[in-house]
Image (cartoon, rainbow, N blue to C red; front, side, top):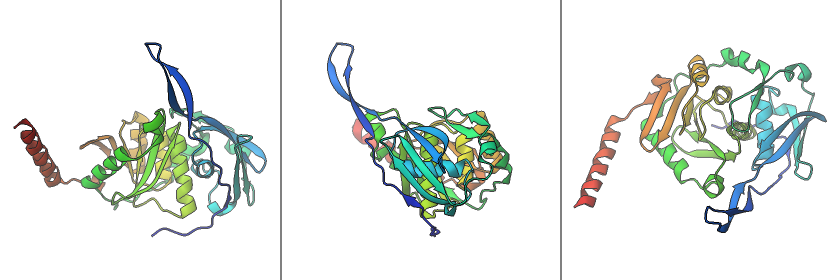
Length: 293
C-alpha cells in the first residue's frame, strides 16, 4: 500500500523534449531531424546555488526533489516547502523549512561518476552504504522479468523519436509500470523517479527498477537508497556496481533482452520458471516449422 505523504508546493514547468535540426546525409540530401533537448537547470536551495544539472527537462521538479533525496541533503519530504522551476532563467528555486545543516561541508567534496553527462555525487554518500538493508524476502518471477522487458520494448519514448537519451522505469513486482522517465543521463532519470516516489509516498521494497543504461555504482547506490531490491538493465554492469550490489544485497539482472538475462547477484530472490521457458521455446519451434512449410 502506498504511503500518503505531505507534498510541497510545485511549479508545473513544461519544456519541449526535442529540437528540430537540418541534417545532410552522405549523398548531400537534406532532411529534418529531431534530436533530444538538453538544457541547464541550476538548483538554488534557500537562495544558495547548489549545482547545475544538464537535463532533457521532462520532469524538472521531480528531478530536483530526487536529486536532493539521493544526495542525502534532505531527509524528509516534509522539509521542502516549495520547488519552483523557471525555464526563462534555466533555474529552480527550492525553499526548505529549516535550511540544510552543514550544507557547505557536505557538498565540498564531489565525485564525478561514470554516468552519461558526467553525473556527480557528494563525497560522503558511499559511507552510508553500510547502513542500507534491502528486504531478503522480496521475490521476482522469471515471467515478470519478461513482462517488464516487453513493456519497455513497446513503450512510447523520446528515444524512439530522437535517440540519444536514457530511460528509467519503476515497476511493481507483478510487472505493472508505475513511472517511466527519460533524460540525457540515466542519473537524472533515476533521480526523477526517486522524486516521484517521494511525492506519491511509494515505497521501494516490493518494486523493480529498470534502466536502459549500465549498472554503475551510482545507479546501485541510488536504487538501494530508494529501498528497491531489484535492478534490471538491458546493458551490463561495472565491477564497482557489482561490488556495491553484493554489499547491500541487491539483485542485479543485466543484458535483459528478449528471453535472455544474466543474474549477477541476489540469486535467492529470483524465482526461475523453467516450464514457462520450455513452453515458449516449443511455441517458437512450431512457428519456425510452420513458416518453413
